[in-house]
Length: 117
Image 1 (cartoon, helix red, strand yellow):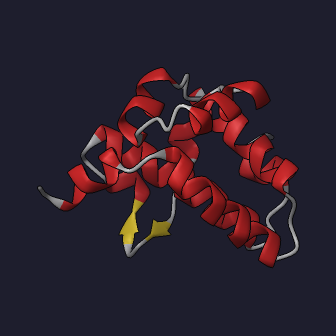
Image 2: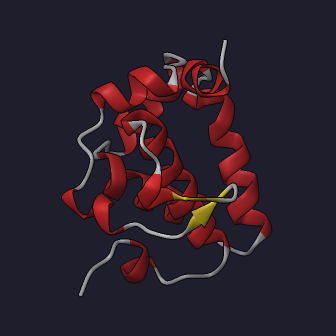
């Protein structure tokens, strides 16, 4: 199984606590994390909770997500790769999520993370 397939099969539930730890350690809140996840994926609070409870894989998670049209404005490097240059559409979505979580942890304003004018 290649690296991408391993990532796609990981559950959102297994990664979510790592996202929470990362942002909280940097002085942000779980509520802010949920806000940026909701903005990116279209899942509301109960929707995020359902994804966690059902142990949805990243592949299923992004099949069900309604990605914001502004996702294409997410640029920069995550894991040494420019997110805007990732060719696999599913991996690009996973990295978009990683990138907005990273931006939140680094103290970026929510409005800037959401790419609002």
